[in-house]
Length: 137
Length: 141
Image (cartoon, rainbow over all chains, first blue to last red):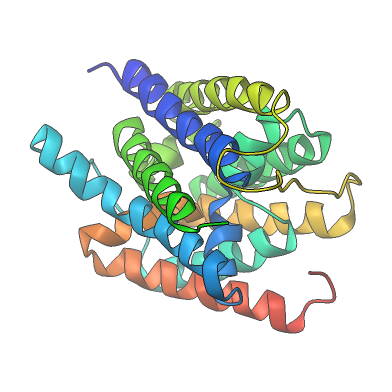
């Protein structure tokens, strides 16, 4: 399948998930917030959020079972760089109240200007980082 | 209210999210890097992922606005902050640096844990530490 077509179809599934979580449970599907919340929430809310994260983790194996191939994944960064990047992503997404899903998909779908600002900043920052890596390489 | 429907709905939504990520190409850090590589070998195709996702989510949210409450809960839980403040901008900037360095954002990284790849586990473990550090030390919730 053409990457633009699979991208659009995969994106539509992501959008469907975000829509369903709001229509059924009244919740924003922001992955950084849901994952961070697992460390603090208790009781039913914890179970519900854990179920979402469990489903998310089960997605790629189900995809592999259905299509006969795991999704492509080529990791470029070294372990120390991945550790640094993970720290920045964890700290930054909590400080900024969201990531690609909460601000990028859910926030833009709600027409939130706050989310639009966050998306423009993390896209610009990500593009600048990759450009700098290219210069340094 | 009975929690079982909410748990099943969350599990299904998570599965659909994980399938969507798998199909979309977002699980591949090389593709994500290519999307961010505007001064080099730019691959804009991942913009279709965001377009498709925002389009379908937008339709769902438009429908939600016409409903008195979600199917399995009493209230829609929506963010109340409106202001574009310093924590938002600084947090998004830091997140972007980590995203550019690794090619991973939280959703794909958590979903990719199922591949059993060590680099993914290292990234997610560090991400959890970063989240805990923000909660512990920052002045902002």
